[in-house]
Length: 115
Length: 111
Image (tube, rainbow over all chains, first blue to last red; front, side, top):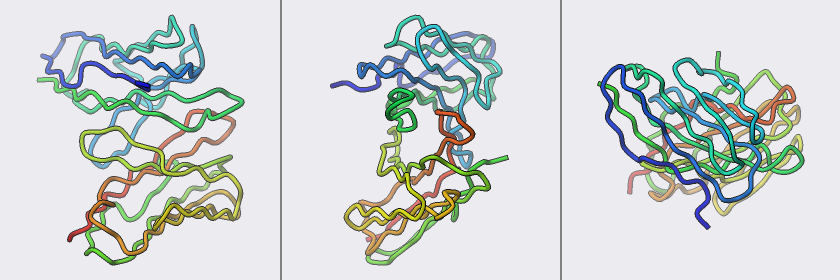
């Protein structure tokens, strides 16, 4: 059982470039979310989705875009990378509103460096 | 403004010592989770506490949820080097199902 799979694990970008971080889960979870982790800042929510076709902004959404066309996939797009987006990104999924919505299963993370 | 305040931010202790990590908020949570994260990996769930005053034990780890469901603590007895990692508390409040996280407590246990 793969759980939550993130790709790539490492990426280096130049300022202004765009890219997509991929996230897939095989647990049939309704909820999916993206967090960024910076030293001393904990995990901050970027965007989340409560089901296919439904997305919403979190605490730090600027510069990022998401879509949820299927239950399994929740890609995160950086539109024009900036050095401030250098971070480790985690995708997570959780159950349903009726069961386990608050309990997250995380991917292994994607370390992004923007030069 | 951080919804969940964790303390201390750093802990460096010797093997065999006891420690407590605190997670405090002014908000009421329907449930609160504790995660542990090792370098290069994603956080992994340790426990969920749901009922005010609840105490859960996981081997040498004891988790407590405050009576008012606004705070929680994690106590480790006789810490071991394998306990080294980043401990994170998380909770959802105000009807949201998406949790917010504290800033974490980085624990190092020296042999």
